[in-house]
Amino acid sequence: MSTNRATIRDLRRRNRSTLLRRLFFSGPLGRQDLARLTGLSSATVTNVMAALIAEGVVVEAGVEESDGGRPRVLLRVNGNHRLVAGVDVGETRVRVELFDLAMRKRAGSEIAIHPAHHEPGVIVEAIAKGLGRAMSDCSAEADSILGIGVGVPGVVESFGEQVVHAPGFGWSHVPLGGMIGSATGLPVLVDNGAKTMGQAEMWFGAGRGVRHAAIVLLGTGVGAAIFTDGAIYRGATSSAGELGHTSVVVGGRHCRCGANGCLEAYVGAGAILERWAQMSGQPRRPDEDEEATLKALLTGADGDGPASKLLDETALYIGVGIANLVNLFNPERIVIGGWVGLLLGPALLPRIRDAAAAQALNYPFGRVSIELGRLGSDAVALGAATLVAEQFLTHGDAAVRRRESQPAAVGGPVSNSPTLETAATRLT
Ligand SMILES: [Zn+2]
Image (cartoon, rainbow, N blue to C red; front, side, top):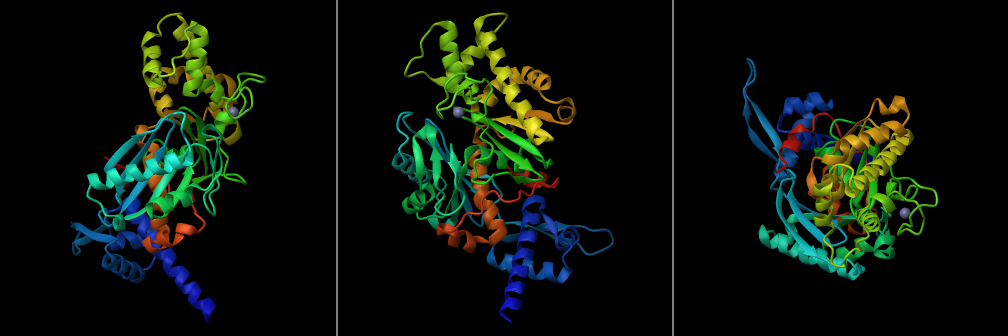
């Protein structure tokens, strides 16, 4: 008997999740459409929708005339039902954004952090402060927030306490999820920033409609999120995708991970500027604005000057890294994002493609498109918020709250169906 009850409960939960996901990605839809698209019976659709409407999760979204029949009532996920928070932890700032359940941005705030002070307590305090400001900007109460998704540089053990290993921050075994949970009182899901950016691009950006993709983050650090058959590839301990620490030059430049010749030691923001300092003979200033210097390099790069040479070499290294992804994973699409990727990409993309073409195997290279990210610099925070949205769509809000101290099933199979247009167009 208990097994039967458990089976029925599981079935109900699965039906609810199937219907809610379909409405989230493809709504508004009528009940008949939902039955047709999911293969569930009309009675099941009616029952589940009645429960979701009673809970305030789903609302009516007008009527649609149908040929010869009665007008159909359209349904959609109630964007106002709850909020989800997304956090992007960077080298010089922590960005906190609040989205509604239609993934519309409601508020955002940025807290500057000193690049030499990445102690866990400093980061947690910045997140709590940023969250407080964002909540106050849109008059949100803590009760209205389902949870906080956090994208961090480094490896995240996506189970238990969500422990982070981030050599760039000097972190080893930092129980970040628990620390943020204690500071904010909210459920927390932590993942690597390249992976959260990857999920955002797959749901709403340049990765929509493909099932095999690599989303590359070029910023201060370099990483990637690998999607195979629509699901993120994590590896044995969640560190898969550390593209920045794959070797491009044997015995090459020293990397902050301790090894030599890593891709990040050539194309991370600091690495590009160090190479420029060596080429130009002008030492870097301690208070240097990296973004402003990179912009100036782009502007000054014409003809055969040293800035052009530096950017040519940078495109070559990025192209080699991309060729390695093509040869290893055979993706349909490679998306380049991150603030350095988006800043240099428009000028360097043709050279990056040429370098990748020269290095990759012809057959897989002929079947991959290389594009720039479409979600701008907000993609890490948006993707972090989708971790919470994903939990809500799969398990419901009560389950998100229960999961506070439980394993975080982050980054599960991504519903990257070709029917994402509606949710994507809601993004502002
Ligand atoms: Zn390295």
